[in-house]
Image 1 (cartoon, one colour):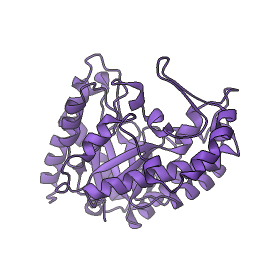
Image 2 (image 1 turned 30 degrees about the horizontal axis):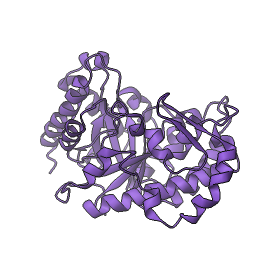
Image 3 (image 1 turned 90 degrees about the horizontal axis):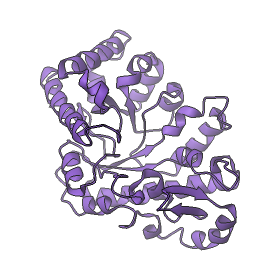
Length: 341
């Protein structure tokens, strides 16, 4: 089923809340709701920890809030894991690892234009999780291929469950680590990353997409076989719109863009208004229109969201909730301005 466009709203999943119902209510206030990830509630709700469930070799310390990897433990647990590779329940997120996910699945979401889920992607997970030698597991030629297939199965199982609640469900693969692969210091360059990501996305059911808040090589991302791409346009929009050729090809293939435009950090949010955000966004669209990407077509393939997640505001959840409210007001304002249904 298609992902809707026309400037409907969604958001990133990581939220600063410790009240599950309040977080769900805020997420449900957007056009395309999602299940929130609440690391302040407990460490199981951390996005890396949620992705790690049942992955062989994982060493999870809830008290110290650390996630590590043991190659010896991986070798001991691998056969038992492979025996359950055809068991969807093995790859789903359990209630222990997310109370919120299961409450979301209990809701009646059939009347929404779409719903969304998410899972940490293999590149970011592989960079973040270190072995006993403090080496990212992404660098291990034995672990990495298994990691790609394991995470693809986890994405597919979640997507299937979400589609039972709404046929227009889609997934974000959260990949903040993709911005680092273009550094000569990363130890994992764009050539192997391209090969691995093509293999990974080839295993994932559609609709499929990437979310990241950084500033990677946009040609690399726009030329992946994705259905949706979610970006921090507040920080990177002026750079992004320079990649006109790749963007046009992406849109012509049917891709959806999610314009993350409202800052969620207290300091930046205080500097902005709905008028200033609207002007900045329309200026970006006008620039693309002048370069040959028709604005009406672009808007038909666009969603809106806050720019990033934020867990560290001095006012706790207040700025984040204000950003969610502002993005919904902005959507309504722009949809009226451009006569979108």
